[in-house]
Image (cartoon, rainbow, N blue to C red; front, side, top):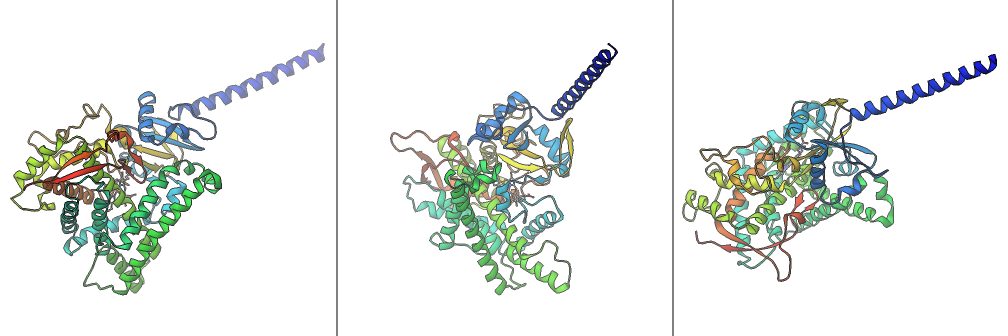
Length: 505
Ligand code: HEM
């Protein structure tokens, strides 16, 4: 009996211990859950990826309506927190700017950036800071040279008008004409050189960029499962190879320019950003100063970033302007009335007019809000962070959902409706609500914002000053819709045709 009672007591203590362990585990599990944002149920292994689809920004925005402005999702095995409101943006990317200034370690981003060199996909580091500061300073420095950005933009806007006149009002997809002008703004700024429509380098560039955009969409899934890129019959390997060769072609194009510019470098004739770079490398070598991030590799990647981050996004933004103007033609007379009032007869639009064109600028801003060319931006935490009680370990991917912020009814009355007047104050001057975030927010916000905005306003003004646009829909075809957009480097409207009918001015 004594033995029995001893046995019972042992069993009793063992059960109690097991119960305690279970309770402790439940407690840890529960408190772990409490310190992690809510989100929809995930599939095993693949997480939420199959549910996101091509319109991931829209689906994530829908989820935020149910789960709140900070939502947890999983991309394969990678935990991601999605920030969906301006309040969450401010709390994370501004108030804790340095803690959310990292970049997600997407496998494709590594391929994009030659393992994190340059600016766009560099980690939050001294090299990133140095490169970013340098490019901003170089653009300012170039204001006193023929590579002045405003001069370049005015010239390319005029070239775009000439090239559209060649269509004689016939239906056409004007994307290549626009791409050439936008490409030439960047080429002039960086190399001090522009290219013609028939130039082999330009054609190669357009084809490489197209391949990058097409393949980026199809490769989204392989960011969570890099191994998928190695399996032949799934189609990811082809897309990877095509992407790699497109990157290679762009790098070769830049490398040729570096070679030519180095041979002909003259400190008294600075042709563009690349010359400023080469001179800085030379200065540091000559003075024996530490090269820091001023190496050939970094320079190549920074130039590459300016092209990748600048050309496709600006092209997408401008194609959305053309799309909205053609699809909703009522917006054209309002802008044209302002242009005809401000410009003299026969006068060309220039960057100097920008301040006198608030309606045009507000229209551009409203289209950037509705279209959001860069809807999702991948950041990461640079250390362990606690945000609203959620504990996010260092390296957690933090997805900035600008699309959600631009459609948030708490920030915008009737967010789905086009209303340029929301960007004008009582005196008719341009005003920028803090929740307007097409260029991101915080330390990694777009460094080309001012350049892009001037470019878009001047190009759009030149377009509507010289033409009236109408959408051409082939018989039997559906009307092109905002929903058909394709997400690659940027969110691009699906191909459409317009008639650009010359105006009497
Ligand atoms: C309409 C055109 C453009 C849009 C919508 C756009 C949008 C953006 C966005 C949303 C980001 C990420 C911001 C963040 O994480 O907070 C970004 C970053 C960046 N953009 Fe732009 N961009 C445009 C044009 C340009 C141009 C013309 C240039 C080049 C001069 C440029 C260069 C960059 C660079 C280098 C970064 C990375 C900044 C960093 O990580 O520090 N962008 N852009």
